[in-house]
Image 1 (cartoon, rainbow, N blue to C red):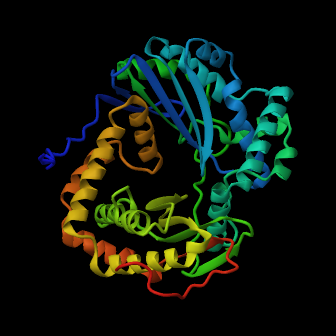
Image 2 (cartoon, rainbow, N blue to C red):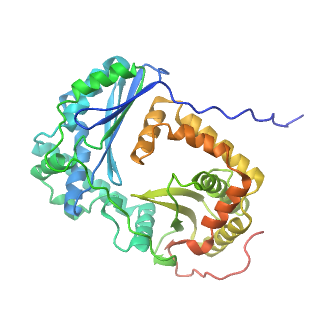
Image 3 (cartoon, rainbow, N blue to C red):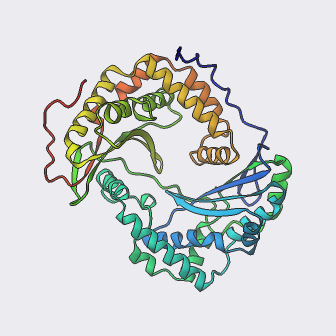
Length: 433
């Protein structure tokens, strides 16, 4: 039986559907896209929030948990099969909502009532506060969160406030309804906020309707622009151990400085990142996990620490395999920096990135979240389209150069978190090079 796979076809062309991009009188930027794949509408909103201290961060977390339950329109939205969710990620507060396309005005009313400051009920505040306290306690017990916070402390000393996943339970217990109302008035403003609406709609008509329905969300008093949070430079590269007695896994967390997404080398660095550890057929996954069985999970990816992009490498391994896994990871990192990816690895990474981009634009929720993500990074609306073209123009030599420049082991620092009583960095050669 012939099992030869047919050749791959041409990569899909990345395009944006009909789109309207405008800024409303209250300062809210609205992007509306027509994608009538299903008779629904997806709305994703993000606004910058910069609490001044952990107490205000705690009030913001309680507000975030309470937002979906604050409006009568939100209850009506649920009754027709819609939904409203809220979250904070770094320095951004996000809302996501969905509803049948014919009920877009109700979705707009829900957003308006949710975002416009009003007096919160003490009972609603208590319920939201208790929910966030439970979440904070659970998060503090998660090994992945423990390792992430260890890496942040290693990189920055004092962890920048927006990078904390949640405020501490001690601060959360102090929050009352009046403090939630105060943080709503101060931080939840339409200036610099962005709303992406995607679905079975006419973009121009949708924007006009949103302008009318969201007019009650007015700019607050004071400065028109929220001051952006900056991340300090990471510490000098070094590898730090953190003992966690009783852990049955060890977490390896490494990081190195990246570059701005508008940098001429960013497309080449992106392909290098994917080839090294960005997907299931990447080099790290193939060697450490599939060939040698040294890691349960391993990946390399970009991560945004506020205004700073870092190259991250993560691996989860058994306690007894910590030394061999770390040694092999560092050798692969060194080999990747010196030799770079092969032509085959580069081509596979390009096909993967092109396919993932096309998939992210194929669904309403995927398109909405992808566009909003790039807007929050300060990129133009068509960045995905132009970046896909830039990837096609990258040469193998440019990818190898990026690998040599940015994946040199000396650039990486990080933490080893686990039960390290018997850990030894030195050891015999582990696996085949």
